[in-house]
Length: 565
Ligand SMILES: [Zn+2]
Image 1 (tube, rainbow, N blue to C red):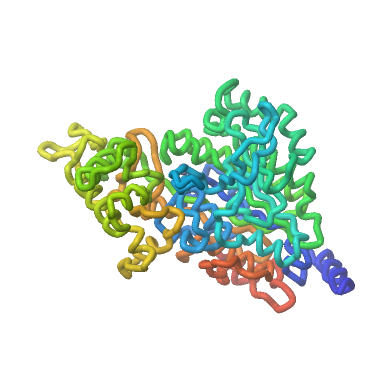
Image 2 (cartoon, protein in one colour):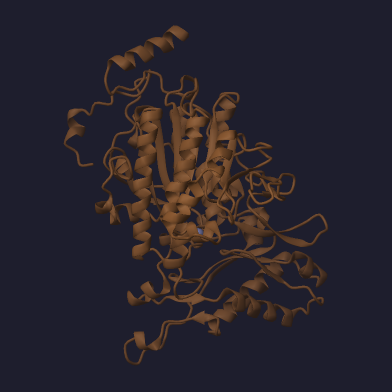
């Protein structure tokens, strides 16, 4: 066995540009898998800003030397960060991994409803928060993610020898993409910007992470961002300098944990949050977002050039995607004559609550509508049960209340101004929303349509009693300036899907693919089990022919040479 590996390594050294004969996790070929997620990164950005990208190893690594899919769409209808990262990690949708949104209400031990996050876990504490230095509760873990990730399968297949890590500005993005069996996940403390973790993984930060936090990295990022004080996550996080700050931490991780120096394949998930933190404030068409994307290009060039020195890019495979897209701002949609409306969520949900209370008086201090995150509106099961109302009855009534409030055109809707419309036309009103009771999602009573399938893919028991709802196209919760994402519309579901690596046939591909295909394709390349709830398919159209002893030579053949990339 050992001779065989040595021989294949020797051969691969002799033939320049060739792929080692054996491609699987057990022979450390590739040496390192990188899953790169860019938060709120819509599928049109890479082509829209292609002319901006001047670096060799930034986005051009994918666009010029890798695989670029133009038509990657999520096939579910709850387009938010936690669900998107879990979908990429597990290769399954919410009905597989169960993560519905970022935060939701769930009954605590005392039976009272409390807001939890997709990764909060009372059994653990946060590690590494500078102020006071003590461990902080609740900690975080991936326990609500009900499926294995690609990283988990890599750990299982190598009996824990693979080094799998996750890193991001956001906890959920670091944790849910990488998984349960990982050696560590790191994200930022919002106030200070220091990188932290949870006692789920370790009781103390590694020495290199402590040194990073104690060094001048945060001060440098603050200075470059022009934000000397204030909340690091919100204020520095919306500036381009924050991207390089996180990449610098990822580089320290690769170096000090010796990723890609193992006798099995290692894996790192990296999620860049800053496009989302800024994008919510300014929208997808703002020059500030373009500047941010150009900064991501420069930082990725730095990261992949570093990996080339550290591991050798010929030994690395990379997937690039986004956790969700985004809608245009209300103003941008309006100037394109789309009937856009923003809905002030607080007053809207209050009106729905009032209508339900008219039907069934509620116990003092209680309420029927818990709220939560779109596309879900969560309901208070206990309050309805006290009024002897069944789940389907409650959810149907809530859906009717939403319909009625929307057709009443109440003052929670920020509509297009009349001045922006041709003479004689009224400002557009909110269109018919699409609403489904969760009870019907649970029992599968959803129409057999494209949208029906997407809604079924969005089901999670974690939302309890609730309705799934979408406002009309270009209509969303929020205000005139900002932009958001949550819906089943194409602009929220469209993300890039790009690959780099020796086993791929470079080029631009127009097949309809989905981010769930990343885990399926990488599991196939690594020859490990697909994650437990896999929905994705192996993208065989981008893989070089497998000769049985490895992927065919890297040298392009005559037919490929002239083809456009
Ligand atoms: Zn977001």
